[in-house]
Each structure stands twice: as structure tokens, then as C-alpha cells.
Length: 523
Ligand code: HXC
Image 1 (cartoon, protein in one colour):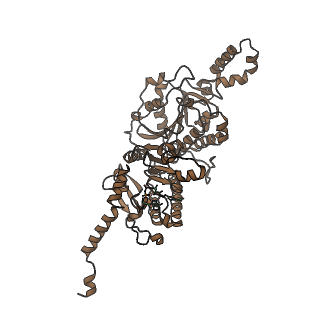
Image 2 (cartoon, rainbow, N blue to C red):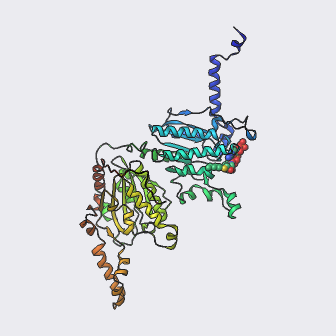
Image 3 (cartoon, helix red, strand yellow):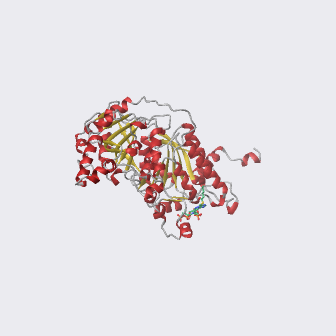
């Protein structure tokens, strides 16, 4: 045997090397850094994936990736896995692709090869038509890599756009996510953020202090509660486990891609049960508030719905739920908050959700009790016209089955913006308490009967007589029903039956629109 041959590693040695290297790389930044991660209340990148992905189904990709940066003493710096774990696996038996940033390796910072791992994983999600889940825990662009890191982010953002509307994209923010890095989650469909351990902002507290002089903590500036109120975050999780639980629940409602229907958990039977409680839910006094959420619970399967953005624009409720085992998107005004009026934030919240549901074949059920758009200087200056128009656009453009139920007030443009009949709604039913009118009776009377009220001996009494007369004549569902703007007036107790039959009959709905690149939603 020649010298050369003797010095060549044997197959056994090669296997040993592979096992050693793999085990080493899988440790990421090592035990000490993992411990630090735990001490700060966080799980490691792999622990998060273990919770998310079904046992034995994870196929890791690009474990052996290495950066090629030589600046700032980086040439010999080892970064196991390049600071991100990527691959595919199943969640409750359904395929997804994932990227989980590893904070124990250079703070999960994003360099050229780190970004390439994420991009290739996103490309696979797109080609295979399955959801992409990203778990963010990163110090941002890897500073030593300069514009190569910046370019990596650009490639990720570009793919976020390519995947948008084709496969669901879910982002979990489980650590820092600062600067431009925050724009990838912002381009995705849902953001789940962990309270206390995650921070998300364009510029951190130090820069804010330098630029504006404001002193603010990182959590106040960009914690989960702050970013829920800004409308960036959709779900707040109490810890990493909770974030994964929410992600799995969310995925259970969604189709794998835009060409599929959402999963069907039903047994084929329609549930047509009556619920007498609903007959007494609307107060006699039209100005009295009530909570719409218990109404939603009584209409859907097992009373269960996943509310989205509960603390952003709480005057509107949006939720994913199921009817007869199949996913629906629920939109409702919330009379318990600001009388359910539509403001700028509620308009953004609803229109974004309607567009998501339409992109992923989720029928829309809209519960209407809306007194109008919110009047006021700040709303006008903030662009309530532009924002409200998004709702009209979103509902008008949506071709999924659209069913609206008028519970009480349905006034003016706000009624149309909540998917009134003329917005291409497939079914509109009203409860007998419905008041479909061009505007509220009080406002209408002040305009139409202004002179009569002024000239009457008792203006207050005359005004209330006119209000009663106007309400009886116009603010009822019968006028709309007479003009076929309302398909039916139903007893509230029969609403579940109405929705079940309507959805069933609309299952085969196909609505084609003129070919175009895309519509111009007011932004
Ligand atoms: C390289 C980084 C890094 C980064 C953290 N690290 N962020 N390395 N590039 N961006 C490294 C640290 O040097 C440290 O390495 C390890 O990760 C852990 O970081 P710590 O600071 O010890 O952790 P902690 O105290 O928890 O603080 C976390 C942090 C802080 C708040 C994220 O690290 C931080 O402020 N990092 C810089 C954030 C930043 O300015 N990023 C660039 C923004 S520019 P060692 O080896 O010492 O353990 C940007 C532009 C993107 O993102 C544009 C996209 C369009």
C-alpha cells in the first residue's frame, strides 16, 4: 500500500467526521450561549422548531453553510449553521417550510449566506405551494458583512413579495427585530410577537433619543403591546411556547396555497341549529351598546374563533373560524367600543383581512351594526376617505362567497363599506332589528325637517316626533327588502341555519373579473 493511500481517511473515518461535524454544527453557539438564551426567557432556534414541527419530519437544509467574509477578522470566525436553521417539515401532518434564526450564533445576524439559506427555503415554499414560517431572533444586518448583508435582506423582501398571495407567510418575532429587518415580517400575512422578550422597531431607543430627544424603553417603543397598537402585530404570545401554539392554530385554518381550499374538518353534515338567545341580544334602546363577540361564538362551530388584532382598532372584530368544519373569515363591528364606528384603523384592519381571505379562498361572513365613519378633524386629516375606500375596494374586489347579516345599524357609506348588497355581496339578510338607511334618523331629521322644527312651538317634541316617523319609515329592514337590497329578514335564532345553507349553496361560486395586472387599491 502506498504512503498516499495509507494517509487517506477511511470510509469509517469519513462517517465519523460527518457525525462529529453535524453534531457540532447543531449545537449552534454552544451550551453557554443556549443557557443565556434560556436565562433571558427564550428558547433556542432548534427548540422552537422542535415544538412547531411534527416529530421526525424535519428535514434540515444547508446546515453546512459558511460565510465568506474576511473583513474585521471574520476569516477564521466560525458561525455554525450561519446563524439560522432552515428546512421543511410537517405541522399537524401538513407541509411547511421554516427559517428559525439562531441568536446564539453572532446574535442571529443576517449575512450573505444566512440570507441565502432563507431565500432558498422561501423559493421551495413557493415552488411547492406550502406556507412559509419565519422565526425572528436577530441583531439585524451582520455589521461586518456590510452591503452584502443589506443585499441579503433585499433578496428576502423580494421573495416576501413573490410569495404574497400565493402561500401563507407567518412571522414569529421572538427576540430583537430592528431596523430594516422589521420589513420582512411587515410584508408577511401574520405577525405573532412574544411579550417581554421581543422588540421590533425601525430605530431603537438610543437613536430615538439622539434624533428627537425622547427617552423611551425598548419595550415601550417596540414591545408586543406597542406593536399590536400600531397594527403591525396580529397576535401577542406570552412566551415562545405560546407563540408556536398560536402559529399552529393559525395554520389549521389556512389552505397550503391560493389554489387550494382551506382544510375541511367537517363530516359533511350541515349544522342548522337554532339559538333562541340571539333573539334577545339586541337592546331595545338603539343607543345601547352590546358585545358582538358572544354573538360570533353562537354562530360558529363549537363557539371557537381565532381573533386577530384584538387590541388594534377594537371597534372592529376580525377572526378566523369554522362553519360546518370549513374555514370562514368573520368581520364584525363591535358596538361595545366607540359604538362600532369605522375609523382609520378599523378600515385598515378590516380591508387587510378581507384581502387575505380573498387571496386564500376563505368565505367572508360580515356582521353589521355600524353607525357610520367616525367624524372629526383628526380623522379627516388622517385620511379617513382614503382609508375607508380600502374597505370598499377590498370587499368589491373579493370574489370569495360574501354573506352579510345586518344586526342593527347599517348607515350610509359605512354600510356599503361593510359589504352591503351593492358591493357584490352574495347574500344579505337582516334581523328585524336592522336599520338600513342613508344616515341615522337624528342626523337626517336635523337636515330634512330643520325649518319645521325651528318653527314649531315645542322644537324638542317636534324633533323627536320626526325622528320616530323617520325611523319607522326608513330605518327598518322592510324598505331594503322591498327593493331586493336585503334578500331576507330572519329571526336572529335562525342565523346559523341561514349562514350554513348560504355557504353551502355558494361553494361552487365562480366570479370572473376583467384581466388586469392588478387593481389600484387606495394606499
Ligand atoms: C454582527 C452581532 C450583531 C450584528 C449582535 N451581534 N448583533 N454581530 N452583527 N448586527 C453579536 C454580538 O456582537 C455578540 O457577539 C452576539 O451577537 C450577542 O449580542 P449581544 O450584544 O451580546 O446580545 P444582547 O446584549 O442580547 O443585545 C442584542 C442586541 C445587540 C440588542 C441585538 O447585539 C445589538 O444592538 N446589536 C446591533 C444591532 C444593530 O445595530 N444591527 C445592525 C442594524 S443595521 P459576541 O461574539 O460578542 O457574543 C440593519 C440594516 C438592515 O439591520 C437593513 C435591511 C434593509
